[in-house]
Amino acid sequence: MRGLPWPARLYLVVLTAGAAAVIVQGRPGTLDWRPLMVLALLFLVCESVPTLLNIREAAMSVSFSAVLASVVLLGPTAAAIVGSVAVLSVRPGLPLVKRLYNGAQFALCGYAAGVAFTEFGGSTGVPRDVEAFIPLIAPFAAAAVTYALLNFAMMGLLLRLAGNVGAGQIRWRSMGQLFLSYMGYATFGLLIAGLWSSVKSIAAVLVLLPLFIARWAFGQYLAQQRAYDATIAALCQAVETKDYYTRGHSERVSKASVMIAEEIGMGTERVGAIRYAGMLHDVGKLGVPTKVLQKDGALTEEEYAAIQLHPMRGLEIVRGIDFLDEAYAGIMHHHERMDGRGYPMGLAGPEIPEFARVIAVADAFDSMTSDRSYRGARPVEVALDELRKGAGTQFDPVMVNAFIKAVEREGWRPTRSALPPDGVAAEAAAKDHDDPTVPIQVVSER
Ligand SMILES: [Fe+2]
Image 1 (cartoon, rainbow, N blue to C red):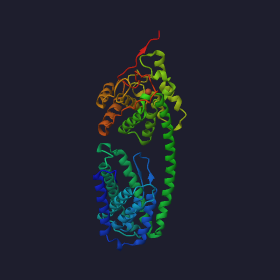
Image 2: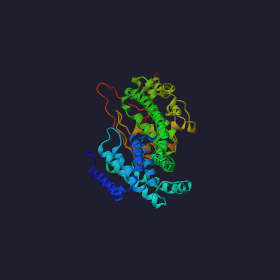
Image 3: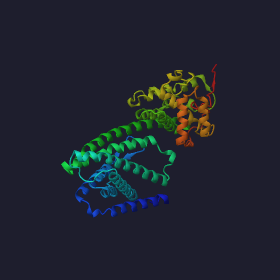
Image 4: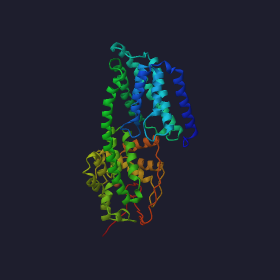
């Protein structure tokens, strides 16, 4: 609480007071406590083991399906009480202030969902048969949408007040995916309510069991993803240790590539693959002699040829990594040019794989907006102008336009490169093979 700005603290107090008020005014003493206890327990179990999603920004708990079941079976006040149980969730290390916030937010979302359910014609109580169940579906959908939207709004406001996110940083695509996940998990609430008349509280177990199996399976998938990420990070670390002045470059190229990929509407799996490709695009530098990478001054033809080989070297290094898939093409061809004057194959236009056309733009942009030993970072606008100038000859205009749009919407935070530690790189690289404004100088050996 101490680290929060005062508007966020005030917001927390208002939410907590609001949650307490809706529970008290709903006369909780008149509720049927047995099903309420079962649903609260169900909520607590789900809340204590949050389900991770394949969306980087989000991890969610499916506990809200218990709140939505309460909406149908017991009404808005019961839904608020079930939501407030989040205060007691078994998550070691979760601070009290976060528990209070979660409890208040879930209680208010549950209450609002209950009101929406009633307003849209839903009647509270156990649906006894199919005739009673079917008319509940539309009001239940309204309740689920209300819950999800209010939850997003409250969370967004908290992040804004706490200064963690600006309006321009909201990733609408991820929010859309999260909303769909909410709607999918909401059906568990309807399922519990539907089963309640025949199997009572066993309905909770029937719903929980497949849910936990699914969660376990997804946990395995995430563990695999983390192993992949660690492999990629180790390779990037090796490259950046060798070529110190491009520190952080791989990660930023990856980020910019993902921005372009999302802007042109690539599917989730391909966006994941291009994230890896961006990280590893220069992994072939491991196969280029350090003295060539760090050479101050013009390169000999032989040295230049060694640099030009780095995309091929990169492919050789990562060829055995199965999960990289389409990323291979991005690594191999990220220095091709639209006019066919690039390397290593001299491909032109649409012959260049799409991943490579994306990475070429991201790579050049980050190179221009980063500090180098021989020049400072260029402003973002100047770098975007350079991309515009190179569109059609060096870069794919579609990718350039997509990136400009994404930067205008989401912004780009230029990074200052760290100075190398003592003893590292006494020499300064006087060239940059990624920077389109600084052509590499090559001298004839003859
Ligand atoms: Fe490169």
